[in-house]
Length: 134
Image 1 (cartoon, rainbow, N blue to C red):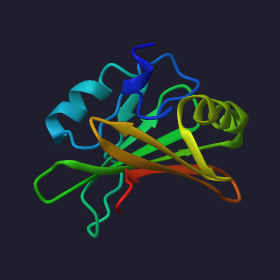
Image 2: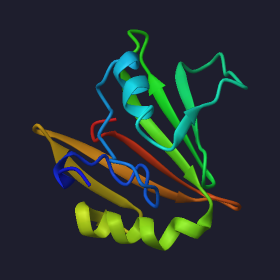
Image 3: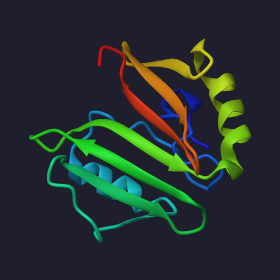
Image 4: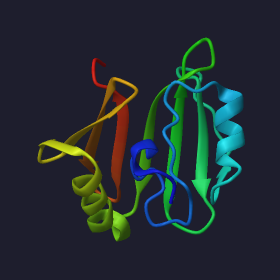
């Protein structure tokens, strides 16, 4: 794995990818980085309320939404996974991030603090990463 300080989170926990922090990157750079992962772009659905890229993992039950600003810069990510990777995800978060509460962690890159929020749903869990001030 690449330097853990650059890890977005786990973004791709359980896959053989170099997880990288993508918040703040332009759309073109995100598309290039994602081509190096097991995720593929999914253009089968669109939501006109949000500007985002949707990726699905080829091998596991994971979906990644990359939210973009009007300027096509990543502002947040949301990863949705089935519960098969839940314990591993929690373990990675506890090892690599500062735990704030039972379902929130923080990490810092280049002086900016990012908030990682885990939410349990009925059929899956989701992880949202945003700048802490959001």
